[in-house]
Length: 112
Length: 116
Image (cartoon, rainbow over all chains, first blue to last red; front, side, top):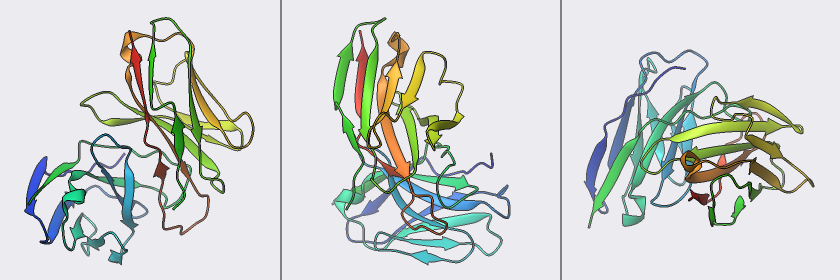
């Protein structure tokens, strides 16, 4: 499995944008980049995913480098509820029937 | 928003006992999964299930584990003879089988299993 590298932890002030980086230098041409997050005492929650182009949804934006060796999850205006562990995961598909391999993720702390 | 529902939220069992963890996936989803997370550790894949059979399983999912979709709505994980090291949070997940879906995998809130 292609691996991802994320910082162990990050801090951000409330109501400011947050940029969470992920390196995936061994990504293959067909790997999708998925982001999930896990709030305290909850199950993982889907955030966003993409293949080559930048993606936006109601939760976040995903900026993918042109060479696809890195990506950045952007939370446009952090709230206290965004404090969670964020996982960057590569997957061969963008739909069902493939396991997700979770790493240790980035623990995001939001400072009020 | 549709949810994956897991019951019970917390189960305490004695070592050697059988437990069944229950999940109700989202109704139009066709792929189902179990993951577990030992306290302080990574989320680990256990098994995936599609079309009434196991698609893939991890090394953790040995003969003590089994899964079943008994009635078209529930998806269960059975551990036949629990060990202390089975203590963990168990998450059920489901996903659609539609290319290009934008919803990813939906996880439940988990069942905390404590083996004593």
